[in-house]
Length: 116
Image 1 (cartoon, rainbow, N blue to C red):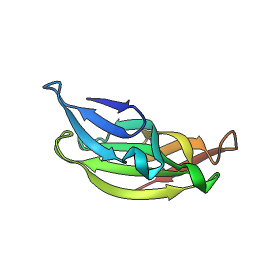
Image 2 (tube, one colour):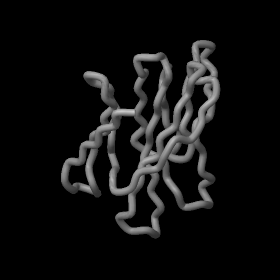
Image 3 (tube, rainbow, N blue to C red):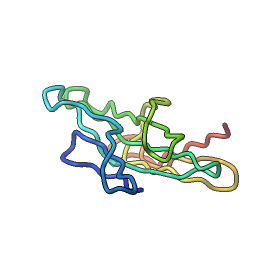
Image 4 (cartoon, rainbow, N blue to C red):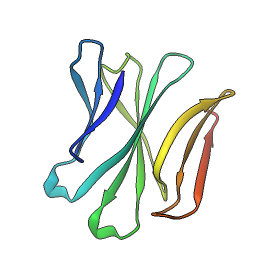
């Protein structure tokens, strides 16, 4: 499973057949860019993907979107959106999910922990 950004508008998950499944898309006309894709396989086999969302006219208002797949990437559903985090990666360590990135462009390091 690969997580790839094509241009800055499409986030795909490539399945074993080599075809991609769209996880998220924003049209160029929206002024929203998707970036910093990250993927983790959870211990139960579910996939979790996150990516940053940046809207050009919102200054430093960067957010992160999180999506989940329970069928090995065939379908995806939206889980949550988090504010004030960008350039982040997700990883699983000792029974907890973490997200590590910056709180703003060239800002402080921010780490979040989820237990559920």
